[in-house]
Length: 329
Ligand SMILES: Nc1ncnc2c1ncn2[C@@H]1O[C@H](COP(=O)(O)OP(=O)(O)OP(=O)(O)O)[C@@H](O)[C@H]1O
Image 1: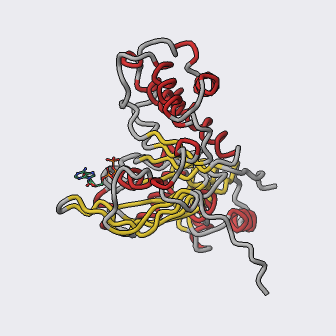
Image 2: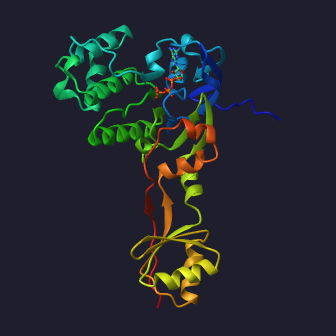
Image 3: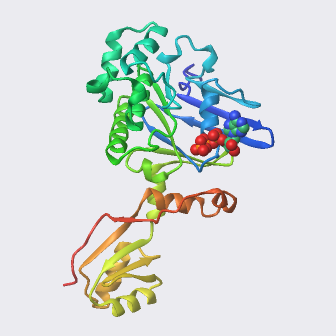
């Protein structure tokens, strides 16, 4: 028996997009969904096809094949599109001689929205004290905030930002992360692109990792980090040699990572504690390793040689200990 109910369409559905610019295949079968109530990071190196995908979603580029839908509807069929999707593609795209407030008023009026809504998005963007100044004199960080304020004018359930972290200082990055998380907590779908995984740390719930015009991974951040964190333990001990022998004999791969620190692969923290205790090896601290998003990303793309050759990432992985347990009695 069927109930007649069907799942609502995803907030954004990108379906088998292909797009060539001359000899360049910008999109080569790009497919993914974006869910409501989450921040989805859209990550990949420069040239991977992120901006082109976003332009297709907004109807600014026409794909050779495939389609993109917003709540089940192509952008071109949306009535009052600002009420369905708010987007920031290029923060530099504004009239430099116009005040920031007039820029927003002009956009609002074009969609039948009033000054009250402009004041609301200005307050939320933290730009209130600078809103009467000419937009041409704005710093990059202020332009990003203005672009985000503009995207929010229609109070849309779907928000899409292309590289909003670019060129921002740490305070600006912190603000955008918090703002995107708040939007998702209100139930909105948030799609945010970046070519640096580290920018999305602590902000994205889900990741769509892309390279050369297609999806390499489509995964929850928590699952990805758990997968990359498994079986690695960080240990602080004054008895490095004894610990190394005992853990290596039990099958662990042990590396010296500090004057009194060892990193052990291939053993759980419970197993490491058991082995050290059984061998009477003292230790001051033992932590299950929690992979950073950057490390998880490296793990994820390790097998994709073609993709790795195209990356420009250079940052060094870092780790965060998540738990400690006591000394040997
Ligand atoms: N209008 C265009 N004309 C010619 N080539 C284009 C055009 N737009 C994009 N491309 C090419 O398509 C590929 C994908 O570009 P796209 O801008 O979508 O990537 P991206 O992942 O957003 O990278 P970036 O972070 O550098 O913007 C690149 O090789 C790019 O040079």
